[in-house]
Image 1: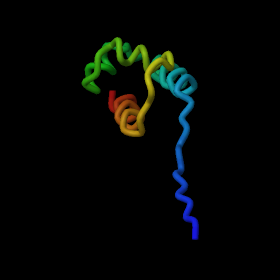
Image 2 (image 1 turned 180 degrees about the vertical axis):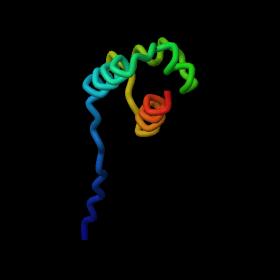
Image 3 (image 1 turned 180 degrees about the horizontal axis):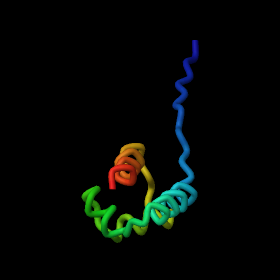
Length: 71
């Protein structure tokens, strides 16, 4: 008997997520400095996220989204 294990991999379009986040941040009239400081990440890290050069995690999406609604 042969068993096959399958994993579900969630694919996130990091570039599209970053662009959407940047748009929402700008619409909220927030600077990268404000958002990065509030989330405890560097401005450079946030810039890389917004440009799709860093991978988004579910936790990052939740933290940064919550920050946009709180500020």
